[in-house]
Structure formats: C-alpha cells, structure tokens
Length: 264
Image 1 (cartoon, rainbow, N blue to C red):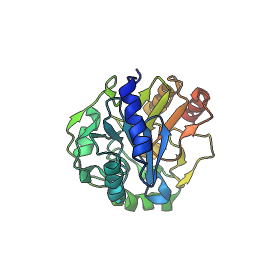
Image 2 (cartoon, helix red, strand yellow):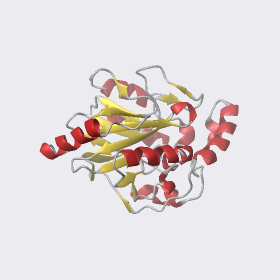
Image 3 (cartoon, helix red, strand yellow):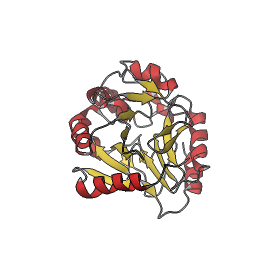
Image 4 (spheres, one colour):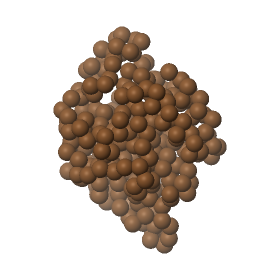
C-alpha cells in the first residue's frame, strides 16, 4: 500500500524543500521523509514524514534531551499533526510528553507507554555480555526517558499513516510497529533491526544489521521472525531507530535482512 500521488503532493514537497529549507540537523532520507539524529553520538533517530495531504507526522520520539531540538525542527517544518511511537521503550518515547501533540501507538504498547517505568519488565540486562555496559544502561534508560505518555489513540497493522502502511513487528517489544511504503519500497522500522551493537555502544560494520539483542526482547524468537517478515517485503531502504539508513544503492535488502535475523 503506497502513498497517494498527484499535484497536491508535488506542491507540498516543493514548498517544503524550496521555500522552507530543512532545519539544521534534519536531512532528507527518502521522498518526504526527514531524519533528525540526537543524544549519545547522534545515535537516536526521529523521523518526520510529509504525508500526501500535506500533514506532518513524527515517527518515534527519541530521548528526553532531544525535546527542544525536536520542537524547533517540527515548528520549522510547519508543525506536527501527530506522533506515532513505534514502541514504548525509553529511547523512543523520550520527547513525546513535551510535544503537546496527539500520540499514537499499537494497542499492545498502551500499558508500557502509560507506565512510569523506564526499564520494561521483560528486559534482562544481565544478558548483556559486557557487565559495565549493563550497569551503564541502568543509568541511561531513566536519563533518556521523558516519562509516561497517555496515547490519544492506537494504530494496527494495515492502517495508513502519512501514505505508509502500518506493519506489526512484535518481538523486541510486543507492539513494535514499522511503516512501509510499497511504491518505493521504503521501510521505517525502528528497532525491528539494529544497525548498532547495543552491547558495546558502537555501530555495526557498514551494510550489516542484526536482530536486536535478547537483553531487550519481550520475545526474542518473535523478534527474529519479525526481521524475516521485514525481509519478505523486499525493501530497498531501511530506516531504523539507531544508525544511518541501510541502503545498498537501491539493491533489494532481503538477503541482508535474512542474515540479520540469524545474528544473536
């Protein structure tokens, strides 16, 4: 399911790109999709999507320290219509309480989104094989968190957001969702795949991806299945929650993602 096309969409894109230069620190990563990085080594990703009716939707909400930058960028882009949180982990809901914008999530994330806990009950940091990193995360997760959020509504697989189809990718979190645009095979997937080594806080080699570390997983086996589900969409560009876009010059990323599902 792809976005609607037509003169109105072209006009919106022309106005945004030419008459309203992108805010500092925001870059175009796909047609109508803009990335803002922030926090530790620029490792947290927030995406803005210009929809076919001119609406501006934010996908994911990064960390609390990104709030001022988030608000400034959203205003420069014309103001947010809604925020879609891929899942309720602290590093993906951080700015949401400060945006004063309706927040949507999957029904299976409502409880955790409302929870004041910065560390989800299913996480097991003892599984991280570098003990100092495990202790560091006990400090970082509360630091990243902006606190609980009351969702304005929910979205489920098959719904349409700003010209993208909602896809459910459970495993890393029970209600983890991504956004898929068939017309150009672009996938915004948050933590469905990792392009970083979260156990060592460093990027993976260029062109590599992995299933998220089991320390964070609600159900690690389902997380692997969700990476395979993503692979079967045959995306050519994957925009994840951390790291640079996974893009091999327009090549089908199916095989790369199948390999990723077998890591960890």
